[in-house]
Length: 124
Image 1 (cartoon, rainbow, N blue to C red):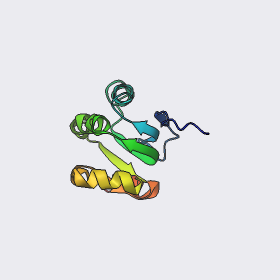
Image 2: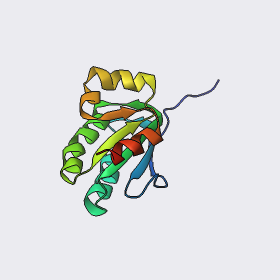
Image 3: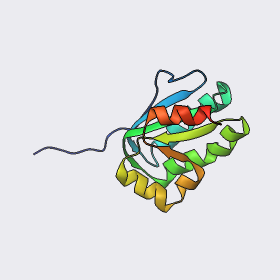
Image 4: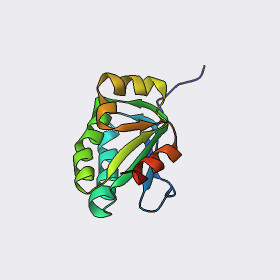
């Protein structure tokens, strides 16, 4: 019999898709246990590295809790105060449903592809 365990959460800064844009790939489960590490990861990029144009790739994210969503909400105003933004891409249907119920598409631009997110930054 196989033992099924939750996937460990990972946030990885990938190769920049364009000049001045940071791509962060998320995978696993972002919950109350992993949210503090994710918050430190994002804060390091926003506060210390002054990165303000962020694209978060949700394609390999399996689950996000209110703690994970809180991390995003906690940094969005600061990112925008630095003339930046946070775009969410490749959001799985089950996670999009949660985001939609909570009104996240009003606050965050949710896009299907990396190219569309990069293009959206060039239009700002």
